[in-house]
Image 1 (cartoon, rainbow, N blue to C red):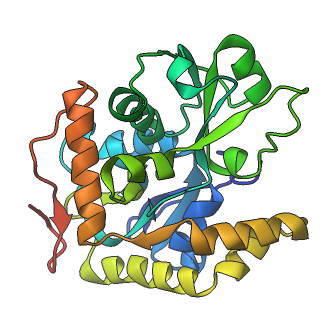
Image 2 (cartoon, helix red, strand yellow):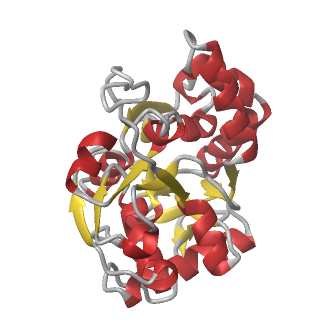
Length: 288
């Protein structure tokens, strides 16, 4: 699958360069548009969970981390204002696939590539679906997952391009978790954002990340073609997905959605949230 953990920059980091950990999935590519040619950033691509691990371990300076991971670091990071991966409804690439009515589901196999999506499953099960299933890390092979559990969480490119009609005659329903979150709360859902260690980035670096986002959003079809150069059919799907399912600006409504997610996750004991978030402001030192 394009965008795997092996897809990364190999150039050695230097003291004057920022180690930037990006997500390899299609939906994150507009956020790094042109940054691989920047003299300032050493870019590597990984799974969302690996980006978080690298940031927690201080093996990168800035990471596009799953939103839940912001609350799991050993010390507070600064959130870079603006760029993020968001949906305002159906997201298409984060979904539960089930062979049963969701109210009858007793077990869910989990693709653990993004811990935010795993936490979102727990929140939706408790608040929207009203079920308490057994959650089992497994996958993201849908047939194997459904052989062991009633339903399966699959995320990213695997979910976006998955053909649920080719499953050996079994009826499989896709439940879009972006849409489910919006049904529950009426709010957008924030999947990931840039987070940096304190005192690492300058105002110019923050501006560069925002410009990359703006340029990427202005060239979504180019992003899709570059990501899937040998698959014109999938390029069309990818372009539509980037235009209609994913948004990239972390504004007031998006922050309300993020805070709501943090509160719900805290109530389930998944994280601890004290109501504050640290942002890089004008001087680009983290501040509440």
